[in-house]
Amino acid sequence: MAERIVSMHAAYRSGKEVVDGFISRPSAGGARNAIVLIHGYRGLDDGQRAVTRRFAREGFVCLSPDLFYGRLYNTPEACALAKTSLDIPKAVEKICDSVSYLRRLPYVGNRKIAVLGFCMGGGLALYALAKSKSFAAGVIYYQSLFPDPEDLRGIRAPLLCHYGTEDSNTTAAEIDMFRQALDRYGKKYKIRMYQGAGHAFLNNPAGKIEANRKAAEQSVAGTRKWLKKLFS
Image (tube, rainbow, N blue to C red; front, top):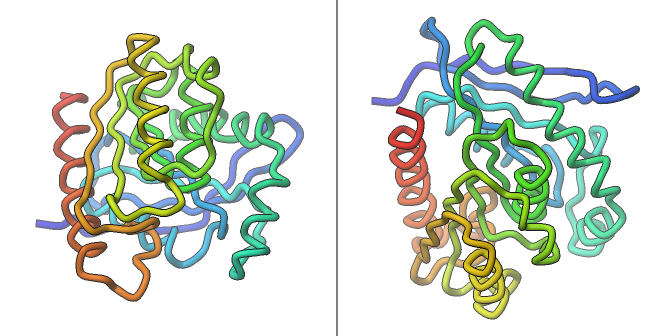
């Protein structure tokens, strides 16, 4: 049964900046494990907020930092420009600094924290996992930003990675290179493929394609089960 949730604006400090965001959590009391949810190249839009709420209903405190300063992008050209113009080290620092904010919240405290990202956010999540030991797990959805294999060496947490077989952005060749890098450096990971699903099947299920809807449901259920077992 899905949890009742409460959602609200969030803000925390990263260096000299204040990072805005959106947080959802179960209404019931008690400390919960948390997920830092990294948006794709559209920004913190309604789809991102919906996914934030979705994982809160699965029992997690879920925080989505806004890495685009409130700006949203809708055309392919604008989205691509936003992604390729991003200051990656600065964005990763903001992601890592979210942990200390969550630790101060009474409904997280010293519980486990995962980082989850899709599209551009999937690549940023990988960078954050390599930079910080604070994340106990990483969940990667069809990353469209690909770190150099050498930048994956620092990852210590286990990974769960989700991809659609019909994804033209995160291709089979990219997935194979990613898998080879993880194997080379002895990383612990699982890769799950979803037949017929395309890119962004969770955060932007184009046209509500049945394969995308099915992949979204299965991947969320699988992520919840994997994290619950890992964090128990």
